[in-house]
Image 1 (cartoon, helix red, strand yellow):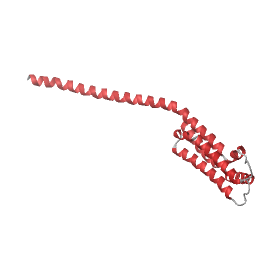
Image 2 (image 1 turned 135 degrees about the vertical axis):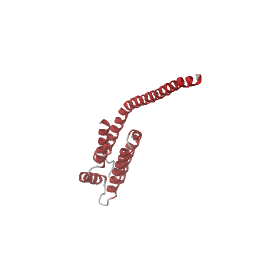
Image 3 (image 1 turned 45 degrees about the horizontal axis):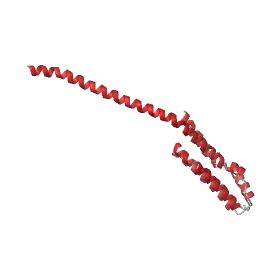
Image 4 (image 1 turned 90 degrees about the horizontal axis):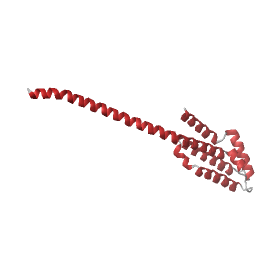
Length: 171
């Protein structure tokens, strides 16, 4: 009889212990999630300006390698189209290498678009330089400018992608 009384009194105690343990576990799990959320939010707050700065730098890069602006900024040193082609492609590669670290703040899609734009710009310059009717650096500049007026600059597409991605970040 005494054992039955002890068991009857232990059942509510065990039930209360189990319920207390369950709610304590639930509380600690929620607190852990809340702390992680706060840390994540703080990290995002610190990383957001860096990401925006990376997008700004890549927009500046795209503007600087845009054929129209590139040709205006970099005049040929002589009439040799090969040396001018080398100068232009070297300048684009230097600009790209200078901004290479920005890729860690950009999405893979945006970074790939920027790389494709760089390569398309270099390809455009090389194709024009290989044309037989282009016999001087000045003629090369003229043909490149005519081409981008007719077809548009490769940089325009990448700039649009950057603007779209930034608008997604801001919303």
